[in-house]
Image (cartoon, rainbow, N blue to C red; front, side):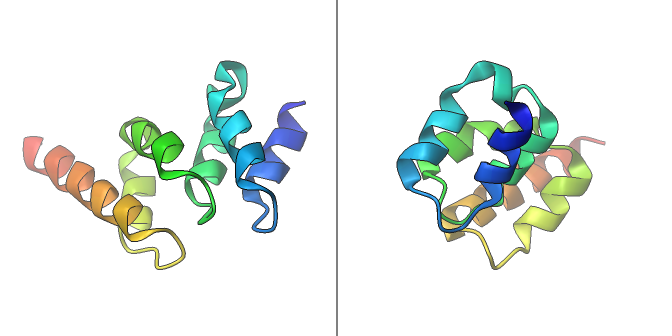
Length: 89
């Protein structure tokens, strides 16, 4: 269920393959909380996380760009998207 997917996406001791499966299920990723929880998980595969960063709100991007708990590639991408969006306005 979506609730189980959200809680599994937030677990740091879950297998990477489980996180990949959650990221590939369109019906689960369409829920913002599941997507955000998956992005903030440091064990989530980068290939699954990076395309989702564009869907985050500006507030969540701001928090993610400085979050030391995620992979550096995710932080840098969030910072880049954040700067692009803030310069447009």
